[in-house]
Length: 105
Image (cartoon, rainbow, N blue to C red; front, top):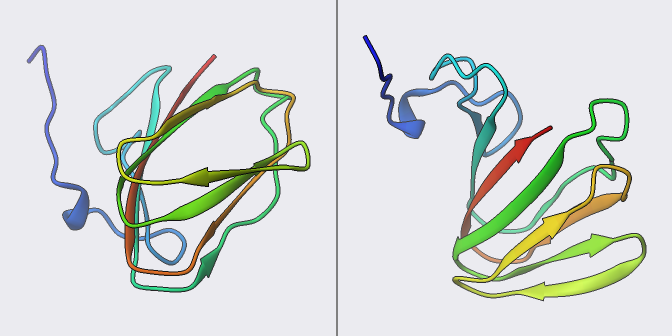
């Protein structure tokens, strides 16, 4: 078959509100995560320097912020931010929000 499909809500959360779809969709290089939070939520600070993976964060609903290398970026629906692999990043949400995160080397 030349495609795979899956609804993110059918994928077990590996962290609160985080649905990792890479394995479920059998992706070789692309990572895709749906973040569906009910309220106050804080991610961990991290980077992807070892993997060489850049990421794009796209907020679909709600509001929050993304801190990249110490700079706070306010997020609203429809806003997308690309982050270099070496940059440290951390997500914050204070209300119900849905975000799609995509990454690849």
